[in-house]
Image (cartoon, rainbow, N blue to C red; front, side):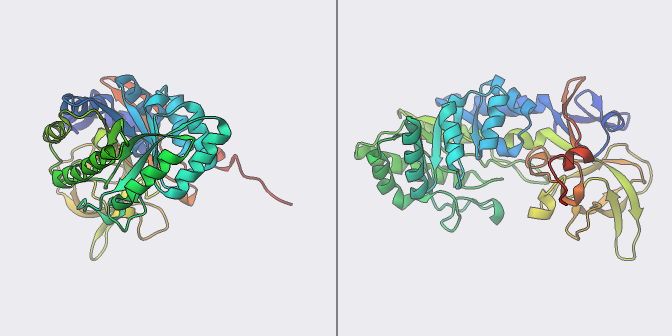
Length: 414
């Protein structure tokens, strides 16, 4: 995080010392940098400026209303995968005419809500969904704008849990089946074909899978045009990776040049669905060490953050850099950083060399994406608060949950 730095040994995000945030709001605590969020969005806008485009932020990466509002004011559209995400976008002031609705399991109620809102497009992922959408649109007296999410069968070279473009994945329709499905869509009375979509995976470090997928999709678009099925936009999804450890993320400018060359002379607008690359390195999770537990084979630092706060290490064995908020002159020791949840899989990081004591604060970096948005209440743990830093200003953008709020919807029985 370029906005993270030390002053007299104390870790700061933008102009605010992290230890002061822990004192004010407690821990665990998610903290985001407005400068980093805006810089990430502008990097996309500049990289793809040569091609008419729309950046649709993938809401699932981090769905706080303040973050959505910030991107909406920068001109972003949104990629959603649920009716709840649509409601969040609208509450944050997002333009429904810039919303694309992805996901393999859209319900009829979600379709009605999206039709009522007037979204840009439904990214359809099966023939059954297409028929349901046609029926729902007819019942509501509307015409549903549709594209198909095609599966180009490109290996994204990423973790299998976040690979979405191979033929064995649940997402999309096989690219070979797409022409017949577009013909079917053209025959249905309550649908309007608007575009095509693909998304091959997340945390992609190599540009070649992205450009390979683009070539396969563009070839399909040209074959559809030859049949008289003209598209208005081509959505190439997201998936661009970020640095967690020693990765070298793709050069957005190079990606922009590659797509500009491919879109030169074309009439379709380019859509992109970045999520992680907009928010991943703009946020961190602050946690406090409860206990240091020495062992014969390894030492443990038991912190107050857990797998319910940051699921990625337990789910993907994902790596997050962990740094002490206050530097100590003492000799570093090697620790496994673990949480208090009653699961062996409740870990934050293994074999980290840190000079720390009980009560110290740790910052888990690059936690802006799929951190708070995947948080749960496992072990009846209230979810963390969220704070946005804007230079020297501190904004509480989500209050910490309380135990009362966790039980508010539950009822006893006689």
